[in-house]
Amino acid sequence: MTRKLTATAIVERALEIGDTEGLDAVTIRRLATDLGVTPMALYWHFKNKEQLVVGLADHLIAGFGPDPDDDRPWPERMRGLIEGLIGMLRAHPCAKSVLEQVDQTAVPNFLAVWDLALGLAQQAGFDVEESCVISKYILQTAIAIADAPVHYDARHTPEEAAEIVRLKRLGLQSLPADRYPHLVEMAAPMVGGISRETYDTFGVDLVLSGIESLAARR
Image 1 (cartoon, rainbow, N blue to C red):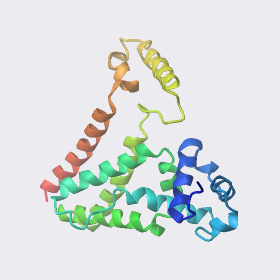
Image 2: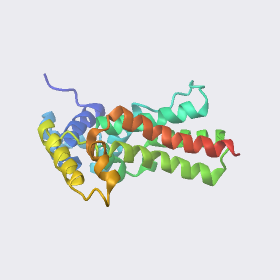
Image 3: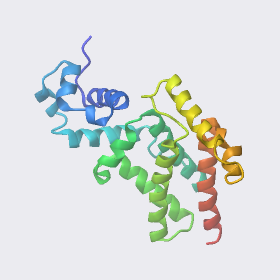
Image 4: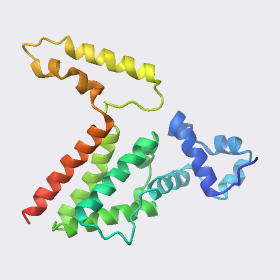
């Protein structure tokens, strides 16, 4: 059955391609072929790839956008924001490239999340400049946690990922123990022995604890 040609259908297929083959593989011509239409039919929704990437970003962020009825304390809302970003980046390997390439000011849902981050920082007692810095760190922290080298994306099979981990672990364990005692001791968790849940939760706790500690001094 032919998929209805809507902007959502185009974006969802673009994400499928981007997640499995990389964002460079996403082209108007490729999408038209996959969706069984002419390129002109896609241009009705997206005039070029730049607009398509904006659509991708908006779709990705829509999944965890701010809830206007959310009245939880600012630390809980900020945690939800960071965890939402991490979850989106984990679910879609191409999301990092999308966020790096897109003009973020052209993405309505990104603007809503950005505005929320600024507002939460101000609720915590930070001034305008500090709130701006915090909003930037929230995004960069989420990208760093989701892109951590202890995890491997969908382009690696489980066997390939296991072999990467094994070789990295052996490399650290073979270091001179008298010179690098801690690296040798902690080789296994350092290269992939930490569970994703522990890694992500501790990372978010670490960042939020710092923000809350600074807020308490205000």
